[in-house]
Amino acid sequence: MQPAQPPRPDRGPAPGPDRLAPGVRPFVDAMADAFPDVGGRVTDAAEARRILAAAPHSPFEPPAVGSVLDREIPGPAGAPALPVRVYRPDPRQWPGPRPTVVFCHGGGWVLCDLDTHDTTARELCRAAGAVVVSVDYRRAPEARFPAAVHDAHAALCWAGGHLAGLGGDPGALVIAGDSAGGNLAAAALLLARARGGPPVALQVLLYPALAAQEGDSVRRNAEGYFLTATHLRWFWEQYLGPAGDGADPLASPLRADLTGLPPAHVVTAGCDPLHDEGTAYVRALREAGTSAHEDHHPGMFHGFLALSGLLPEARRALDGVGEAIARTVSSGKNCGANGGDAG
Image (cartoon, rainbow, N blue to C red):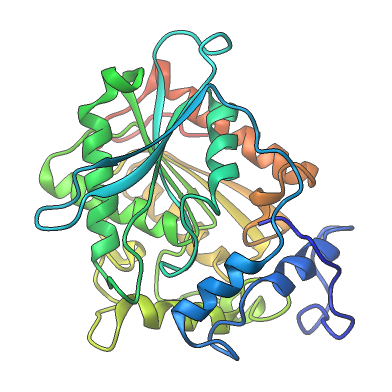
């Protein structure tokens, strides 16, 4: 989502000194103005989606890639077919087998879809020279936990079984996700480990939600930096429902035994309520014997990579993600093989 309107004059930074990088505050406020006030004035998921759909769209042309194809793939057993959008890089620029990235979009498990994250998927395709399979998983509250996790794993299995047809390198399957999508990516890896595959070379998590709002950053960044603590509580309630167990490792991967997961490249932002969860995940992976790199941006905020065309630091973070994914072509590691260089 691109900022499309000036901030409201009454909107200010979080209490205390504004810790955003110079020049970033107008972008944060514009994004916050366009986003539904979920958990506050807006408590219905359908209304929140209507507000988001009515927000002004980016005036920029979408980044060009080699090709884009919408299709359906088999969903989990007993579930509907799963829509995906497959982005292929330009073969003239990226010849030969390339990494294949299964991408799970963010949106608190409730909002967003293939279209809201079309630019993000295109940028990943371009930055890494990778085939990107963007997953339109089932959303809450209509389909609560763990439906989306099983959809993400089904897409990962499908991609792993069709690498040759996708033009993918057989050792360079990657799973990625931003925010709630990062949660689904990590949880899908837990299912892959339990069910014997598919082998994954790298996990790429962009400011992921990995636990039940744990960490001091939820308090420190509760207001004034786009994503709020109120948003997080509402998203979590929609996702789990009244009977959901937030301690389940598939809901909170940070609580899981992380032994044997693939190397990780994790992007975190200092002005993000979810910052501490990403940092703790990197630390836990390292303690479990897995290589994990944290690309930390102290003056950035949740969702900042969506502004890679406007913020130089977002472009640097995206380029770092692309480089990490591209390296899997020659040095990919299997899911279950510790070590490797994810940084």
